[in-house]
Image 1 (spheres, rainbow, N blue to C red):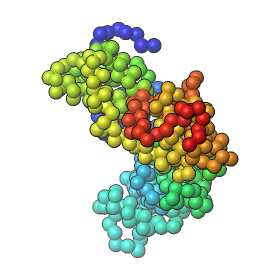
Image 2 (image 1 turned 90 degrees about the vertical axis):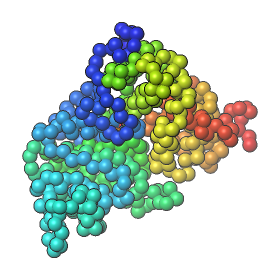
Image 3 (image 1 turned 45 degrees about the vertical axis):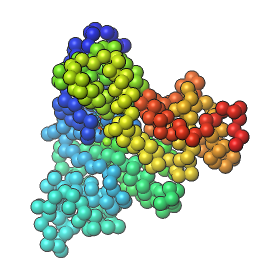
Image 4 (image 1 turned 180 degrees about the horizontal axis):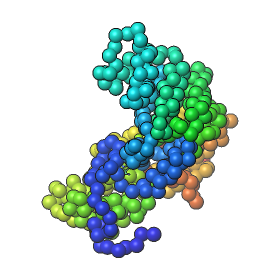
Length: 425
Ligand SMILES: Nc1ncnc2c1ncn2[C@@H]1O[C@H](COP(=O)(O)OP(=O)(O)O)[C@@H](O)[C@H]1O
Ligand SMILES: [Mg+2]
């Protein structure tokens, strides 16, 4: 419970914080998450492999980066981001390049280029990744085994952080039209089995942390591959609670000499609906910018309402929210995408998306004998990826910010279900 101990957020106890609305954060830009850092560390100390999945912008990459920062000297760490990878050869090239800062791995890599004239000590990581991709080719499995084994052989122990794994899996699974291809499924299966084999092989000496903002579990389940993840412990990263968001705004306010009324802070949290750290930072940034224009040092409830209406639903915030839209196209099979969009729009324009409305919408988009299965699959992803939550009256948006954005964007031309008493068209 939040106890109101102050009139402004700045008076709450705590430190100061530098603002950022860009990339991941660590060190003096990293706020809170004490118990998550502790839990992650405890799991890794116990030798577990971890799956860190949560919606976009909740701070997964930051949590991993801060963990890496705090592990210095106690573990050897490797961080790779697979978002830009197109296939598994490239993924292993990224992994090998990421590990090349460790001498033993670098000499292993050099041994692959024995016939060449390359001086690998001098090339940049990006360039090395390209050369490795060419060199590795179809042999990604053996080359991958070699670098992981080399890495695991040294000391201290190793943690390999693999960010945005499900994006790569999604890309490999689908053809250009968005359907699952048999080849893609086979390749994804091979890659997952390869990861699992290595995880078991180096148990106790090397741990994996996989992270991603589209659900890897629903994705694998939809193609019958969930067993490939059964040796991994799932850790969920939740949005901040209101109290944490208020303290964060307090810490930011202290740093930038901006006094936010307590009631204004509560209104900010209410507007967001869920306090996704990025949205917390973004709101502060907008409010601060607004105060600068007013040449003021204080923020009241009216200021917050104005900033929300005029600035939060647009500009940079809007662009980030567009990503929530794009990600759906990666997370959900093509034939079900239109249905997913309709369900979200219904949830945005009505108080809640009821089961009967969902059925009616499914009737418009998929063949009658597949409606149940389609709804189950779509809801699994929408719930898992943090779009919707099941409340007492039906599904509702978790994020009020996303709901308000979605309504503005998709309301026009949408025919809500249940309006004229049953879905005849
Ligand atoms: N622990 C944190 N402290 C302060 N800001 C954070 C924290 N976690 C996330 N953020 C904010 O959210 C943004 C996105 O964080 P990031 O780690 O990239 O999220 P994800 O990897 O889940 O998409 C950061 O730029 C920052 O503004
Ligand atoms: Mg990230």
